[in-house]
Structures are given as structure tokens and as C-alpha cells.
Image 1 (spheres, one colour):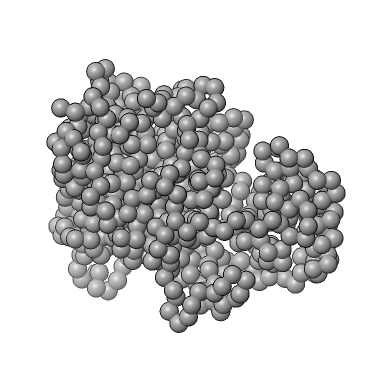
Image 2: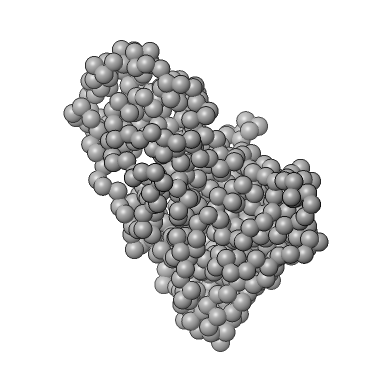
Length: 571
């Protein structure tokens, strides 16, 4: 049986699954709990209110539960001193900037948050939780990566996991201090992105692959997962048979549970989230599915009963959560985290959909057991997120006061609804100029990214003439070329964002085709492989309305989910 968690070269495979001793398991992933837990914790933080000064409200203690699942019963803890303890890092170290999520026709803005579980073992607390000693104080790996998409109307939430053994081309990443990590010349395991400058490079890798604008990230480590799991008071999980995750040579998480439903917490919860050997076929994919079961179950628990009422315990939990988390600078205050949690908690568990990026085993030499995105079906999932289409197939809610506008029509937008910490495009960009005042460079990129197509000669000149006819009298072909599968408009500064949008609208391009980039001096139109002839790019096929079966969707209301057990790991 093929294992998607085969150890890679160097640090790639150092994320140990072990809880006590033994050689680090290549797939020993940091459970999403970390990523998740970090999330909830933030959410728990509260912003000062008059009533808050008179009483301490409940702190919903799991990052995963509150931020990933956004269903905790309410409440925040007024701890102003925590603001100074929040660890932050740059949001995006890559060169391609998508400019953040854009409001829809009604002024509602979706949110995309990348949840990262780091396997860092750089302190005594994390080292005490296990893993091979040769991983201690080494460079961390982003072993859990989940993109949380909160719909613009707040009616639904989609979470897309990427298996840690996914092979990708890494983008160029530049650290704030100036250190440059060049773009990779070949495929690199996705969890290594964290070693290329920090979480900002993990964000850059996701944006490069998915073309989804990421508004925030939240990263958490081992100890954060354990402390948050303790705070929850237990999460029900189910296994189809007795299971013990331990191999003859000592690998495995050590998880040992009887057949049926068990309530797990603390270190046992960490074991569940890190288990590979024992679930399904023993690969990282099975572990991802187990993580989804845990998170949806946690959401239901918080919906049923918010258990945290002890101020002393909440104080220590809050501090532990903050110590274990790193967030982007847009979430650097307790009130921002609290307000974000309030946005997330609007979604009921039944509209939360957990999915795994569709994948295929790599056929490239030396990558046996590793996976790559399944071209068409992975793109279908990414497109649904980009276009704010619910992955559960139930659609979004209709805004009050009128029906959703049909394609090609306009609606009068309401005041943009943006969660604190998320910049509103409408508020941060300059007013658009008239077409005649917008300088546009047109670049021939018709060969496509795969380089298999032949570049169409004189195409940039032809499109420049077309733009001139549409009133863009300052449009001109430049002498550079590119390689894009789809036509995009890139701009260099925030002041050019609105003008770039005018160019895209004139050509019938979607909002996702407008991107901020350090690679261009000004507004530049890349004529892609989809526009080799004619007066307009080839329109894409209709967007899917439900996630493909290969995404292995799990609904938040599914209380019957139960993990299949790998042969040989029962007792």
C-alpha cells in the first residue's frame, strides 16, 4: 500500500508522529488542532466594553473550535495585557499580491484564513510532547495547512486541507529583513514552505497555487493544541474498531482507543490529530480525514455547551493560547480576534464543510508516495472558493431587500461588511480614473504556464489596439513576454488598484484576474493562453455548484462519522 507520508530528504520528513521516543514519523503532522487551536484562542480574546469591565464573560477556549469552526457559545475575556503578548509575522512574503478578498455586488466581503499547524519543537513544552530528538530546535514544518473560507454573506464556511506530502513549486519569498529564498526549480514538499521565511511563505505558496486571496493566517504549535483540548473538556470521536497507533519499530502516535465513540482531550487529542498509522490506509490522507472528524465534532460540542466559566482557568488558558500562536499583523489585537470570532460563529455546524484538496499520487522519479494536486478537480474546489460558492451545494443566502444580481448586471452595493482586521478594498484604494488616463502595458503570455503552447506572434500589439478602441488611448504593447494560462491584469501599487479593475471590467475579466505584483512597474495586461485569438478571452466553463467527490466532504452536522482502522493496528 502506498504511503503519502514517505520521508523526504532533509527536514522534509522530520515531523515526528511519536508522542514518546522513537524515530520521527515522516508524516507526523502537526495536528490541525494547532492550526485550529490557535484560531480559537484568538477568537476568545475580547475587546473592551463597558459591561466587560464589570464582569468576565466566557472564553471559548479552542482556536480550532472558535476560529476554524466558529460556533462557540459566545463570550470574550477582557485581558488587555494579552495584546502585548500576541506574536505576529508578515502575511505574504511572495511577489504576487492578490489584494485581499473583494466585496460582492452587495458590499459583502468573504474572508479567507490560512490555518497552519507548526511542528516546532523549539522549547521544553513542545519537546516534552514527543518526536525524535533530532527534530528538536530544528527548522519547523507547516505540517497542517487548512484554508478556511467564510462566505461573504456569512451563511456558510468551507475548509480545504492540503495533504502535508503535496509536492508544489515554491514561489520566491523575501523575508522582511531582506533575505531572499529563490523560487524552487523543481517540486518541493508543501510543508517546507515554513522554512522559507516563515508563515508568509506558506501563504504565498497557497496563493500561487490557488489564486485565492488570503486575508489572514493563524499558526499554532503542539503545546497550544494540548492546552486548548484540555479547555474544551473533551471531544467525541469514533473508530470502527479498537485501534492502537504503534508499529513494531516504535513509530506511531500511541493513540489507543476502543471501538465506538470516546471522548478525548489533552495529549490524547493531540495523538488523535497526529495519527497516521492506524487510520484508513496509514497515509497522511487518513490523518486529514480524522482531523476533519475532530473539528466538526468540536463545533457541535461548543454549540451544545460552552463549559468555560472559571476566570482563573481562563486567564491561564488565554495566556497559553497567545504564547502558542502566531498571526499576521492584521490580527494583532485581542479585539480584532474577538470580532473575527463573532463573524465565524454566525455559521451553523450544518453549513460547515470540511474537504481535502483533490490529489493524485505523483508519478515523478523519487516521489513515490507523495501527492500532487489533481489538476481539474483541485482547480474546481479552488474556483468555488474564489467565486464564493458554497462547497456543500446549498448555495448562499439571498441578501435582504432583493435577489442576487444576475451575471452581467449591476446592483447597488450596500456599505461593505468587513470583519475587523480585514482591509476593505473599497476603503483602501484610490478612485478609478477615466480609461483615457490609464496607462496600460500589454504583454504577450499566450504560450501558457506549461510552456507547451506556441506564443502567438504580434498578439500584444493586437490587444493594445483593441484597448485603444475601448478608450484606453495610453495602452501599448511592451517588448517583454510572459506565460499565463488565463489573462490577468497586474498592478504595482495600491493607488493603481481601481484603475486595474477598470481595465479588467472593460475586457470582461473576473475580479480574481486583478492582482497586485512586485514584478510590474505599473498596470500590465498579460494576454494569456485563454485569449490567443478574437476580441475577448475564452470564457471559462460554468463553475461547479458542489465539491467533487474526490474532495471527501464532511458536513459539520454529521454525527455518524467514524474512522476506518488500518489492518494490523487493532487490539
